Image 1 (cartoon, rainbow, N blue to C red):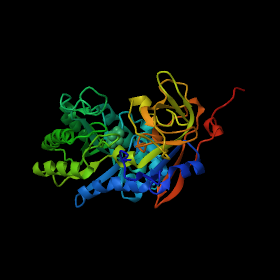
Image 2 (image 1 turned 180 degrees about the horizontal axis):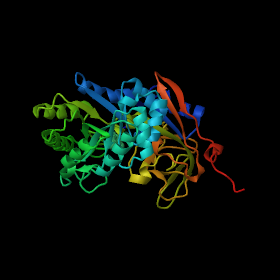
Image 3 (image 1 turned 180 degrees about the vertical axis):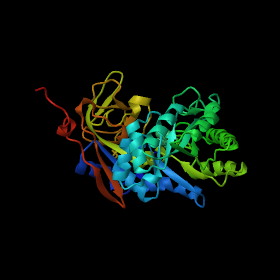
Image 4 (image 1 turned 45 degrees about the horizontal axis):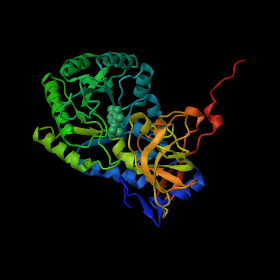
Length: 422
Ligand SMILES: *Cc1c(COP(=O)(O)O)cnc(C)c1O
């Protein structure tokens, strides 16, 4: 039986394993719902990025919103990665995990003054600025600290929607980035502000991208701007091409990271930009297929129209299906020699939107465990406490050994900061 996604998740003797650890055994030990990650899978996902960029000035900044658990950050920090952050909270996580501020790029359309101040004090490498209004505020904040903030402008390459309709953040009509035709003027403004130091340019065109073409289109648009900005007398040091590379959830065939980067480098060199430092901000492609969510079958509920498999994980643990109707593979943690039935796998939360998987063939009984695959990205980091459900525990497997990296939340922890009326 073959599973989509990672070679680190596989059956052995009828038991589903992550990197040598049987998921049933982990569920016995740590309870469910339980996120299980393979550290080796994360490092294996990073390797093609580093391989393709070897010998060039570069920095891979892990986009930590995909999975911001401290041990995950520590894994990437030790591997030499920087981080792409979108809040001051994420910066504190990087620092707590031993990451270096001078390898952090700070993205996001709505940075507050307090976040800017904290990031300047910590010494982040670059602010990826998303609007002209933000330039003014950042300059003010930096000047008040006697500093100059290093800035890159996030430009919106407006990659042709007709060719690539699935790209959601690189088009003219979304909230991200500075419009292509405003970019040179915005750079002029940035260069003239006392609290700013222009260092680079960046873009991020979307997520779960499975083709090379949109990246090449975006790259051309960005390099056009680099040339125009430098012609205006403003040097651009680094080019940051964002993240967004897709993974295999079912039958998608995204390019490998090294294949994608080789194609980009070819174009960069051909256009005479080979000397520039390159940054990438991968999130999903580094962690997505390195994790699974293990959940226990609470009840099987046969129906006229549908059979429901009610499990102890819910939309608060894994939001992607409810939020984006995302398709994620499911697999029984132990194989049974029984005919499978068709189920909707649903959670206990009081919402019809609370489902994890629909129309799946599963041979399971009450008490069995199911793994939702490809759950390493935008799983735990999007978890909430809806229905006063504590967030799941997390385990990282390293060299065949399981390490608890996050304890399950208790109900008391959930209302710790609340006050009763006097
Ligand atoms: C979310 C995000 C990323 C990472 O996207 P993935 O699809 O997870 O690779 C990178 N850069 C920025 C600015 C982002 O918002």
